[in-house]
Length: 338
Image (cartoon, rainbow, N blue to C red; front, side, top):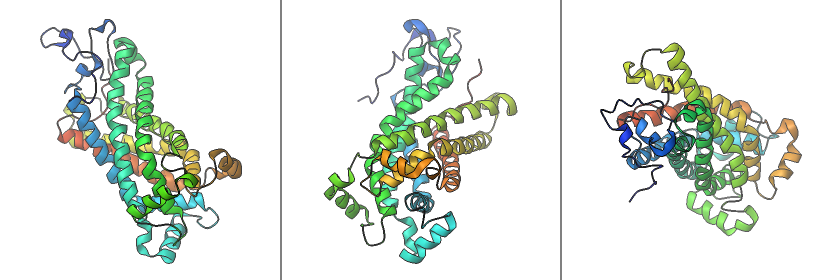
């Protein structure tokens, strides 16, 4: 069974060995139906490739988001209760003193499940949509407007990824921001409680719209700036052919590019992230929360989030590209020379 229908036949004769046709760009395609973006790569982007990318996304997002659960607990409480939680260190100390040392790991279960599902679609569908939109654009336009393709591909992938994430994200936020003793912290009990109060809490998809407003701009920035920073490195700093650099060097470039992209992502998506955290307390719409917070209030906890997302994004790209390298698929980006 195939998971994705190919944009065009992957047996196009124009790209068969020995015909002298050059590969132009990983995200390019040709007009007239004779060229397939999926075949411009080594290895070709068949369904097995996309499935491996989905698995890489599971590892990338699931592991990293779970690892930074203590930062996430502090950040969510700083956003949901800014009067009580004023800084990262103070928030962590307060949570541990009031609820015990394990409290900073509240919500790790829904975090692991939700972000593994999100990563599966975020990375796997990004690779798919990148090729899909390239074929729609045509070979020359796909190269010329590759930045647009990065943006369109990442936005499309994140749309579906957030649907997969939303139920567990709602559980996570409720667990992390509820006062001690007012809401279950175990995964099964928390899901059951959310389901029992689904009308009040709008579970399981009540926060999907603000989640889209947070995650789609975040992911567009994450993938666009990552691709562009990688491209910059290989065009201006590491100017030999990419294949001549060691795997360690390529993965170092991946991490540096991911960290840079992550800082931009945190700033772009932070207001919506604040709204999602506030909605986790229940009862109020996004519009009501924005009205209460005002222009300054939506930026609460930004410093903590920049630290968290910068590190998170750098590690996510590093894990993803490490997995791709182990699978013989190479690292992402850096192939934009024409």
